[in-house]
Structure formats: C-alpha cells, structure tokens
Amino acid sequence: MIARMMSSFDWAARSRVIEDGTGLRAAVLVMDHSNRGAVVVRIETVARDEADRWRLIEWGLGLSRASGASVAQVWRPKGQGRGLSELGLSLARPFWRMDRLELDDVPALALPSGYRLARARDRRTATLVFNRSFAEHWRFQPLDPDDLPPSTRPRELELMALTATGEPAAVVWCELDTHDPDRRPQPVGVIEVVGTPCPVITAPSPKSRL
Image: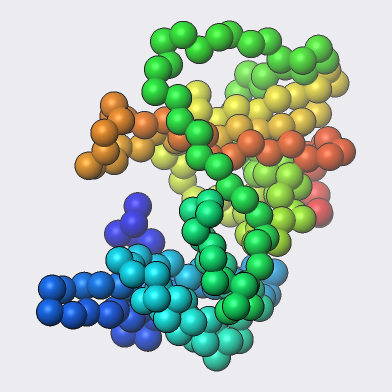
C-alpha cells in the first residue's frame, strides 16, 4: 500500500533529512491532496531528537505556505505536541487506536429495532452514504459513486444497515491487512469506516442528478 501511495512522490522537492556521523537523525515528508478545490498538506516526521523534529516541521510548514496549501496537518502521539503551538498549529481532533487481540469471544449483538442489514452489496448506494456521513469533515474527499475503482475488499466486509422502509442508514467498511514485522497475529482486521449520515438518504438511480 505504501509503495503504491509513494510511487509518484516528488522526493527531491517534498522531503528533507538530517544526518550525522552515525546516520539518519530525522526525516520529513510533505504530502498533499485536493479537498473541494483546496490543498490539504500532511507533514510526516520521524526523529530521534525533538529539536530536529520541530526544525523539519517548520520546513514543511514553509513548503506548505509556498505551495498555496490551505491546511497543514501534523500528527503526534498524545502528550507529545509540546511546541507545536509556537509554529502556529492547534489541536484539531484527537484520534484513538483500539486493538482487540482475541476475536473468539466477540459477543453477537443485534441491530437496534427498526434496522436490518442489506442482503446484497450495493457499492453505489454505500458510497452515497459514505459521502453524506463525512461531508462536513474538514479534510473529507468525496468518492464518485458513478466512477468507483474495482474493490479488493471481501463482500462480507462491506456492511450497510437499512431502515425498516429500506432506506440506507449506515455503512461499515473493513479490511484485512498483513503487516511485517508486527507482533500481532496476522492478518489484521481493520475497521476503516463507520458512517452514519443524518438524516438517512434514499439513493437516486444512476440517471438521477444529485
């Protein structure tokens, strides 16, 4: 996945490293994407020394401004964001990673009253639900329901809940990934998307206009 994402990356323009006699001390990658016509930049760093990290983040912010980006993202673990405010950054949203190592005793839970799972996979309708669910997110990139790439995700890992009247109410998309090296048993199941639009929508036919 990473090799595919980085195949067209401009390493000379969008990366910098700090080295010393022992080798690599720190590195930064500046990646961007378009979101509703605006450029959103993500600054990724790895460093042994925090002073090196702030130096490279500052360089990435300068590149972001020069490229006309409207937003720059810096992801840091909880409690390790000290000094970022001095660079003009502010906390936008916390994220959590939650792992469950044992799956044998996962309890079976019923859907709330009035909802049911769709019997067949409808990628177009699911995409409309996804777009509606995250439309207000500041870094959201909508998917084109009429021009979807082929899916490698197993059908049983794409779920959609319907109301009693058959209207789409929520989607859950999962993946199976293999990570090497990784101490967890492989492959690893990843819950990637949980989308619940409000209000629920009725998907138009492919000939209808949104």
